[in-house]
Image (cartoon, rainbow, N blue to C red; front, side, top):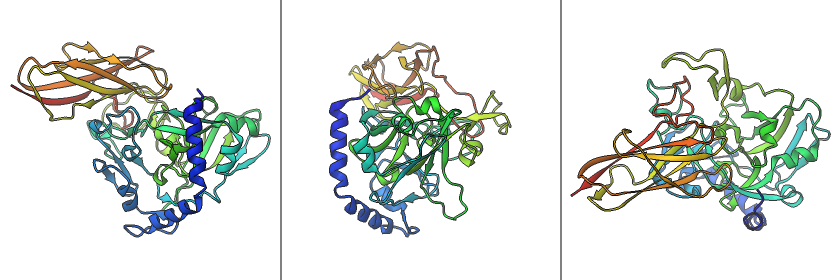
Length: 404
């Protein structure tokens, strides 16, 4: 849904920011040389880390990945410094003045836009939407699954995005018969020239969905370098890899793109496999996230007073559909109480929940959270195992000490 107030503010701030585009480009060059040595045209990891919250835990350097734990997500809108980091390759330092976005493939006419053209010629929108790495929570799978050991509650965020609808660009180019998928091509370079380019495609139906964006802003500021500056796709609710960063090309195809990031990774078995089994040949691309919730307050290990009110808070979301209810248990799942849900926001935004609780006995107490969506799907105690460790959405448990 268009939101003239927020969209207008986001656009004005962006346009004000790009007046100093040369300064931004110079900042990119400075960042590229800050900290450890970085290949030409890229930004080093030390410079990226300096812009993140101190609570962010980095899980790997190449590729750079990092996230904050659940209790650092106690915000309705994820602050930029707490937004998770997930690179596939290196972080490019792109000059906004020369950057172009090209549309080609099964279109009536190929188009090319600067970032300024997009802001000038298409209606800008602002919306809040979840992005979550497919491997978010991977460390909780047993036996261990392959891939980056994301925290059980790390690898997600729900900031405010600003940009233009992808469908408006596709309509401007005109879709030819047979158009079925739209692929985003990212500009992140590899350590070697032969590194496979980062290309993912999404079904045309998702590309034409009104909340799928070509974004230039996050939290009403130009995208940070690590989050795709100056342009990225935002495909909210789906695995983060669908939201191509450093976007320079959109290709309209007659079938899903075939490549490293479509057929070699970000895939799941079509039918369940036993824990520890290898990835079968029959797989499908990872798309929408299942229903999930996390407890954001209190933090694990907190100390609370006997008889004093505790506001147990958290966030819940689902890739497609809506969150219908969230339940909290204080007795390891023997009984459950409905939490109060905040009003619905944007379609793909997470939803805050809260439960007032007064502990009646001293000692160690745990809180469990589980969410339900509008299709009757419940967040499981432990999700089904898969070889690449995707879609962890098990119950989140937080323990506190109640002092007399």
